[in-house]
Structure formats: structure tokens, C-alpha cells
Image 1 (cartoon, rainbow, N blue to C red):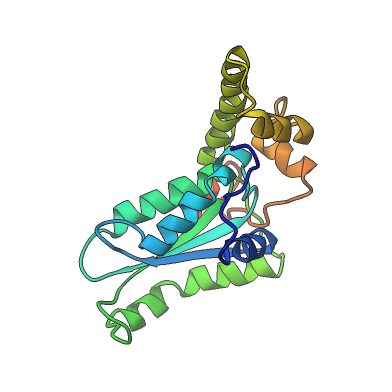
Image 2: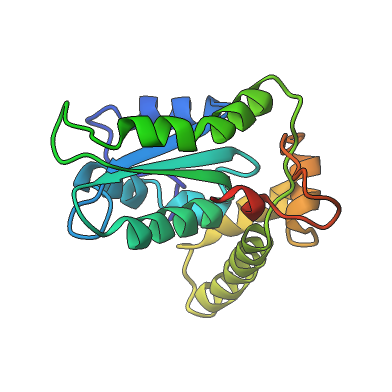
Length: 209
């Protein structure tokens, strides 16, 4: 909380964090373990939790890809969508498949056919011909974290604590306390690059099939 980064520096997290933040498009893929993401992915989110407070993935289009052997895809997908949105990422689609062990993927041909339209959308995102607007969840999460930064800072000051100074200063320097998610995107010079083909008023969630 004091620095905005995980205090451990003895592994590859810093390099991975830089690659994620520098990416134009993100795919978060995981098998289902006990109706949840893998331990490795959970550890990654735990150690980058400040991206929730700092909206670290602001405007980044994200695709989730989940495989399992029986059940648990839906709650895993819900968790991923929630934490990505809290971090500011725009979830543009989901891929789901059944695969019980490495090299055994009986769902392969069905998935290839079912997700071909989604693959074309992703290609259009990457070449800049398709644009996206943030979904309602992005807007709500931004407002939640904005008020959180203000409220916790006021509370910390009453107890003469500097614990929340970094987070509050970050929002203040960005000019986000008087801003919305869309204005924050504009001020950060990041544009979501997908828009729904379903007409005016559609949201990014229209792609979540």
C-alpha cells in the first residue's frame, strides 16, 4: 500500500508486471482448480492487488480462457471478470473448453468453430479497426475505488498514519478525483479500441458469449 508494488523482489514478478502493463491486449488463461483459478494465477492477482486500488489495467481489452474437466467454469469466469474489471481492464470475451489432462482436449474442434467469430474480433482489435466502450462494471468499479481512496485517506489522517498516502497521491496526480472512467481514459491517452456492432448504447459485455 505504501509503494504501490509488492515488496518482494526476489522473483520475476517485476518483469511480468512490466510486460502486462505494456501489452495492447491481454489473455488470462487458467484451468479450473476447485472451482477457482490456478494457484499461480491467484498468486499473481494477490501480488498485483494494488492495480485494483490504482486501476492499473485502465482501458486494456482482456479475454479470458478457461478449461476444466467437469464443472466450475462459471464461478472461475465470474472471479476473473470481476477482478479484471476492478483493475480497470475491459473484458471483451470469454473462451471455455473441456480438457482433462495435457494433450487431451476432446472439445478442440467444437471450440475452434464456436470461437472463430471471437478470434476475428480480437484480430480487429489488434489492427485498430474495432473499438470498445467500457462496460457498466468498469464505470462502477472506478467510482468505488475513487471513493475508497478518499475515505481511507481521511481515516488514516485522523490516526496520523501515512499508510494510504501513495494511493491518494496517485489519484490526485492523475486528476481522477474529479473524473469518471471515460475521462480517465482520455486523460491517460488510452482509448478502448472495440465498439459493439449492436448499435448505440451497447456495452463491452455484448461480446461476453
